[in-house]
Amino acid sequence: MKGFHSVVSLFILLLWLPASSALSQENWNIMTEELPPYNFALDKQVHGISADILLQLMAKNNIAIDRGDIQLLPWPRAYIMVQNKPGSVLFSTARTPQREELFKWVGPITDLTIGLIALKKNNIQLQSPEDLKTYRIGTIRHGAPEQLILKLGVEEKHLDRIASPESNIKKLQAGRIDLFAFNVPSTRYLMIKLGINPDNYETVYTLRQADLYYAFHNDTDEQLIQALNTTLQELHQPDTSGKSSVERIVDNYLNVSVK
Image 1 (cartoon, rainbow, N blue to C red):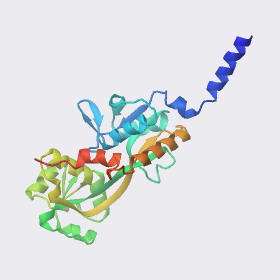
Image 2: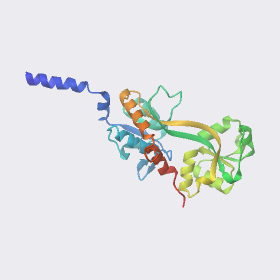
Image 3: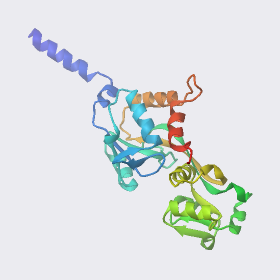
Image 4: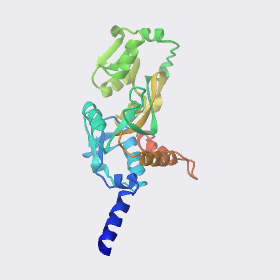
């Protein structure tokens, strides 16, 4: 009977282990969408600023995941799944009042600016939304930046509405549009990929700013969420060289010289 009691005692002890220890052993369901430079597919795996930070974040908390564990899914499907399947994580997610109670949050990862981008040499000065009506603005049809511009009272006749950000960037370079409304870091990243020097361009008007987060299923252990947030704060802290781990990852994608 002594052996039996020892087994029972061990079983009870395992039940009382911290939930975060158990969570670190579960199969995570990690999801993202195509949103360069934060998250995007490259060689059949997910790369990007948010993906690279997540890998460091989980490794420092002894959670074994790699790029192959990250799924690239359509946003609507992933957004529903992260609310319904325990162990799910979705990024990069804007933290809004409407979403606050739906998830447990780790972040901010970094910020995202949606703005109007112009060639520096054109010296465009915008003081109010009314000034936008004197320019030709490139937009992505039905995209968030376009919706923000329309809410400012700008009519569709002032917009050059197409489906490709790369095409809009080329139009901006050629002078066929005056402004491009888009996610500013993504525009810089795409310019580098196209061999266009992003330093020749500037953001002349900010439409919206938002912090990006990792959204965890609401059942995720609170101690683990706190640990991940603490680790992320540490990754944001500069080391002896004056740069943080997060800054180095951002530099890897955005501060690349164009040959």
